[in-house]
Length: 413
Image (cartoon, rainbow, N blue to C red; front, side, top):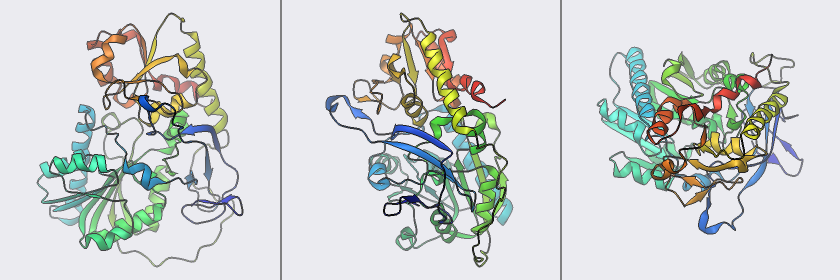
């Protein structure tokens, strides 16, 4: 899964075949949560090229480069649980997962484990539904403490085979959001989940949908933290190879999920003995257009630069959202310095600068100070909710722009 420094090659995170030519290259990109303290601006951020490959043997689209995930996620602090839209989604996500368990087993689930459980907001929904045992697995000390303080049992750990012995118990449901696409070994993740589930237990996960990334040229989702990128057909194929039967793909209406969401609900079934691996030439794995993706990404970046450049120099420009979309969108722009500040509900003002672009992060208390500005909303999945918040702070609705408005301009004809 990592680069062989001696041979200078990358190998597939799934089948271990050598990866050949990258389909995407983004130069000098930061880690999305590697914020710079305003009191320590001399610190150098992590910057490295992002290369995305398609394995010619098994079809997995991936970022094969590794960094120290364990240390990085130990101090991870970002959470979207404050959003009313997200809380509504988490309620529906728990509800639909429980329903599929009941359909498959004819009785109610009693236990759930969440991988990458953050501050415990998702697991709180399962407690509200009456499950007697919930457990979070979260590598961030900071987020795990918040979860534990709120009454959600949480183990500070990375999810992997080593955790099976530590837990010594099985669960009816294994759930995650935007975690499977962050792990070094997706096969290790699925094998661990399979072993931790009771017979006919339910595996549910949410990842970014590669089909939508390509359709929109949503380049900001190509991150150091994202190790794999799945289409619905890819997800189904890999799950079936690892002892799962897919029950549902995107069972929640798109209007009720976040900006780029692929949700899979699957049932544990007896796992077949592995077949002898062999390389298949010229196999079509998925119906997606990868050949000109890098050129289209460059076009989308150019469109954003042109729009920013078209604003009068007397007009102020701010952004909203320092999650992955915000940080990575900014990091690829030539004129990111036009942004005076970036708003985010997770942080207080005067503490952090965005990685690479060094733009101040501003908390809700000070948003009204910039009410005469244009605002580009990077977190477009929450656009309506954010727009309403900003209008209440004195912003003009006509000056509030969604990052999604630029996607169609980047699409192939």
